[in-house]
Length: 312
Image (cartoon, rainbow, N blue to C red; front, side, top):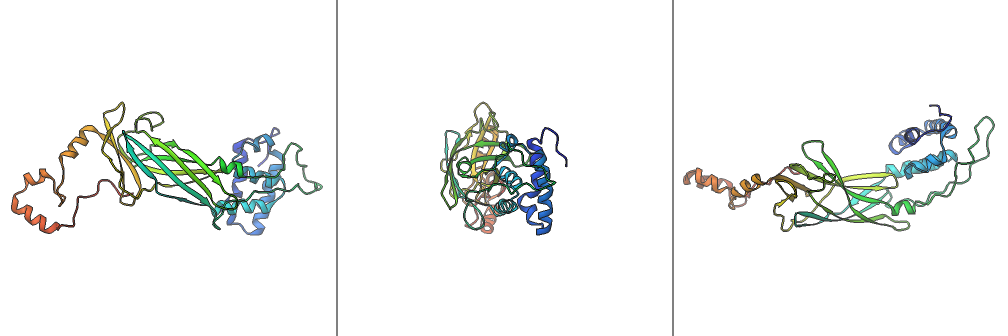
């Protein structure tokens, strides 16, 4: 890849650096890795500009400056960090109040050894070698401390419709504690209003699954949002500006979801109330008593009403 005379843009820099990423880099032998590093460095020396590097995500900014400083060891450290990153998100604390879902979530990010990155240090570059372009004087080679980047980490709720491609992002208020030498601890709170969650508009009818997304230092991790307990007072509530109602529920696998349906459907569902054997009143009126007795004996006292919604 050749660089333009005015240097590479952000997307082009990211494309050049991508082969030095975690999983891809881990598959190379030492010889292959060094050869690839040399090719990337040649392009970087010709086309990377300091103002563009400054706008890259931290992970790629670290890579870019390590390449310019001829530090393959730092490139390997960044790749190992990406390859071993882990997220541990605790179950959300949930309250359903006035048709809004109030959330409180905690999470921690660690690497495979149980810590998060120490500050990265890039030493001054080695002397210029004959036949190699000189490093531009505008390229900053400096100590890199990730503390501020860690403190800027954030958590969001990702809403995904279960049966179509609709997806919306709900930002949370996030506090990060980048404790020295330990895990990155995050706590976040927020409010999910079904009447506004669809990027300022109401959510459509259907089941919406909630995931938690953690963004830190240019890295991103996402997983389904769990909730261990029953949601108190989880009665259907009207979605503002629509003829829909919404209600949160916990799936069979302990994950949090939100059901949005029409008010007419909600009323008809309440009409099909069930007794302790999971038999609706309407079914009792339609089926003769002898058959109901046979059904009761077959079901037994331990059989409850079927769970509503797929357990995902």
